[in-house]
Image (cartoon, rainbow, N blue to C red):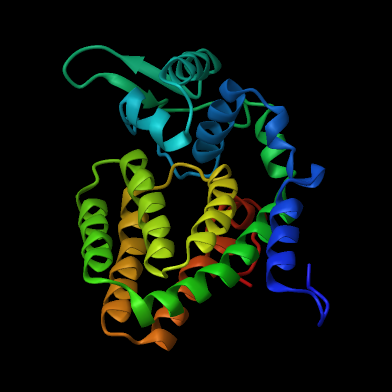
Length: 257
């Protein structure tokens, strides 16, 4: 929501935080933690982000990536196996895998996610505005230590062995970039937006995630070079593409804004 010409920046920031807590954004919060895990994995299978026969990451890694407990993940995976979305295999090459012929649209809770289209687009737009400014400020004043941490996280994402591991590093990278901007209040406000948006993230193919990491790498290089305009441009493109690549674009064919 745009502020009036006489409205102060702190007031607008407070309004942003309050708007993020409005009832309009609380659809998925009516779901249990178990249902959110079931919905996110089932939607990834429905959209082809997880392929038949693909092995899921370890339970602990999924729990960290989706911000739930391991017991919740185990229960969700077991129920998805019962639904025919996943299957369990024994032996050396066993584990929990996407079924060879997975049941589609088997989880009712996924409809709650699909009904949040306008809210997800709004969160992406909020993040675009903030991340562009963060990247600009980071390019003007990031410390050597902050740059080294960003570079370390890019390397960690290069080496990630699953979408779950990558996702955890991705969140730390963007929060570290906000910290590099040098404004503590920005980190808190941006973190609120980021975490609310991450509640809608699904598992993604690792190849696609590694491609997005090239944008992380380019962003760090622009920040290190002190090129504020380039850093802001890369950050803008990196976030805006979520309109197309998140489930709201994949399921509805929405064009990138």
